[in-house]
Image (cartoon, rainbow, N blue to C red):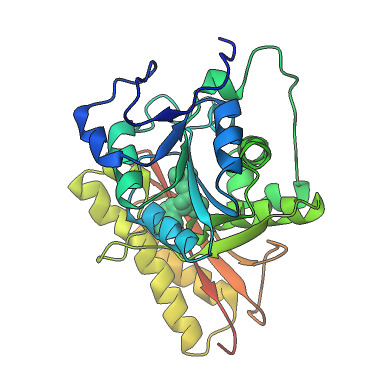
Length: 308
Ligand code: AMP
């Protein structure tokens, strides 16, 4: 399917690709651009712009990024796009949740100025050359090691989103710590005039990091999955009590994760900049966990800051 030209859709207008419900009337004032040309046109009307890239299925964690964007003296754009190129062949691209009407309603309530909502066909038009941006030192570890090609897809789509929306700044969550680091390094290495702002991880009251994938969890999965944040908090408490050897911290985490029989992809202590393994915490260090509960992959992390 090719591009059909510039048609920014205001909420009151017709939409030809999604069956919008009447609930969308609450969104009056939010510009929804499904085509790249529309996004470009609308973007230039907004002046200084903060972009919050998402894959939708928005939750309070995403909303906290939007809130932070509003504090930047800028108009706020949110992109909603489940990017096929960052999913592996056995991953959950097809079943990834896409509650688009709810997402748009949330954007309306959060006073977002512009939503960019392209289709996969619009972003990856047939005939376009394959482009790969790779940062091998940062992507050969952790998520990159367990999800081959994932960060090439992330860099590809974020590069396109940046070129389309031309944000002055973009906000990424620390929940996806390696992604935040990779994007920051990409922008720095390629000299793009875009500030990358980190946003802290929002958690449910029980400690679990909010994630669009949490909705797949049964009550029992969730109880078991809670071991991830519990393990991170226990290691953080040990570090706060003076233990800086990461083998001690990693062992503590491992014990907590093994009890509910989680399938652990990795438990790591890495430098926040180089993402190289750390043996003794003397500088900012991320403790990171990826584990699967009932085949649902969850990731989480905490940052240790000596002397903080
Ligand atoms: P996603 O839709 O999962 O691609 O996430 C979009 C953005 O929201 C990314 O920058 C994530 O790091 C961020 N994010 C996801 N979950 C949370 C959370 N619990 N707290 C803060 N930011 C989050």
